[in-house]
Each structure stands twice: as structure tokens, then as C-alpha cells.
Image 1 (spheres, rainbow, N blue to C red):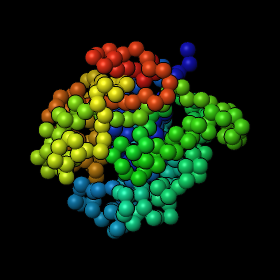
Image 2 (cartoon, rainbow, N blue to C red):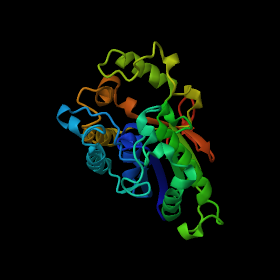
Image 3 (cartoon, one colour):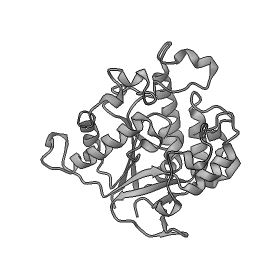
Image 4 (cartoon, rainbow, N blue to C red):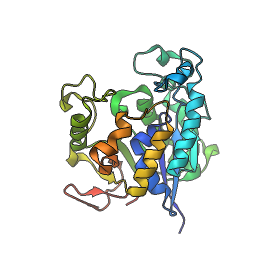
Length: 292
């Protein structure tokens, strides 16, 4: 039986690990699955958590993207992901920075690309790998980062175009993706993290007085799938997180997540927005296999 494909579309190096690392490790270990990760930028505008590397920043040497590319290679190798692709080629699109910053206006900023301008390269990937499942962000990019929003737009447009046999047959034979998922978090997990990390030095919920103030997450009953982190997947996700030294320092909340809340907190959750939901378990009937 031929391998079944899953395609993940992410915005920056480390997003694949932070948001879906356990899922990637799980499917990378399955010989019956063909796994592909597409990343849209090099993350040039990211924060630098290593003081000795501060000179790589965008407003200084502007070399962070190249360094994060190296981190990405270490992280994806730790997860077991062999098939990776940068949208349009390495360095084609630049990290746009946070919403409303000058980086949004850079000539190569991913935020400034029209979906139809950036989508053809992804269409070619879809038609070549022929995945059954696509995983990307929701329309708000999970938490509002311009590149996450743009990755959603480009991924959804590429899925539409790839299925149209009349559109750019030079990019390969048309292929329709069977299921599409958006990453998310259940309310119960957000509440646990909020309580555990409100006092952390790098508090991810800074500025929020309560969970109600956060712009992401959905009620548990609105989740469709959960991919748990078994011992191997959890270890691989931890190793991949450690590879991103510029972004995640020892003792940061992401580094401590499993220690504080248990390996179960490393599980990842999804909403199904196209396709038929497969069998599940637990109180909400969540799928445990995105290929179900």
C-alpha cells in the first residue's frame, strides 16, 4: 500500500515545533505516512534569547534568518522530518514582524504578498506530494501574527487551486486534499497554562487579566482532533525546542511546559474544516489520527 500524505504549512522556523512538533514526530515515525513541512519565511524578525547572538538581529547584522535556518535543520531532524520545503525557495519571503511594525513594509515581507503570488509554489508541492491532509492556521493565524494569517490564506488558496485541473497544468496533475485542519488549543489547556505561567519571566499571557482576554483557543467541545505526545514524540519535541536556542532559552515557559503540566500538555489539537471527521474517543469524541 502506498504511503498516505500529510502536509503542514507554517510561517517561521520553530512554528512547526511549538505548534505541531509532537504531531510531526508521531507521523514521522509511521512508515505508512509521507510527511511534508512547508515553511514560509526564515524568521528574520524574531526575538533573540541568547545575548551573545544579539548582533544577528534585523536592526543590526540582519543575519538571524540564516541562523534560524540552521536551527530549523537541527529541529526538523530531531523530529524525524525528512521532507521540508521553503515557500518559493529559501529566503524568497521575509518575516513580516508583528502587526503594525515597519517590517510589514519590507519589499520581501510575506505579509505583502498576494495569495495568488505566493500560492503557485505551494500548488506545485501539493500536486507533487499529493497529501490527503493539510494542516495550517485559522484565519486569525492563531494569535494574529501577519505571517501566520498569510500562511493560512496562501495554504487555503493553494488547496483550492491545486484541485482545479484547468489552473496551471504546468505545475502538475490536479489533486484535491481530502481533509483540512486548523491548529488550535482547547479552553481547558489554556486555563491550565494561564494558571501555571502567569508569573513566569517570559509570561506568554502578559497583558491578559484572565483567560477571557486571550484572542485564541476554543471550547473543548469545538475541538475535532487531538494528537497525544507519547514518550518518543514528547522527547523529540523537547529536543526540537532545545534546537531553537535563539528563540527558547532554558527555563522559558515552552521549555518548562512538560515539566510543569506533564507530558500531556505537549499534545496538540486541531479543528477540522474540510472533510469527514473520523472515529474518536473521550468525552468529546476527538479524533486521534488526522488520517482517520
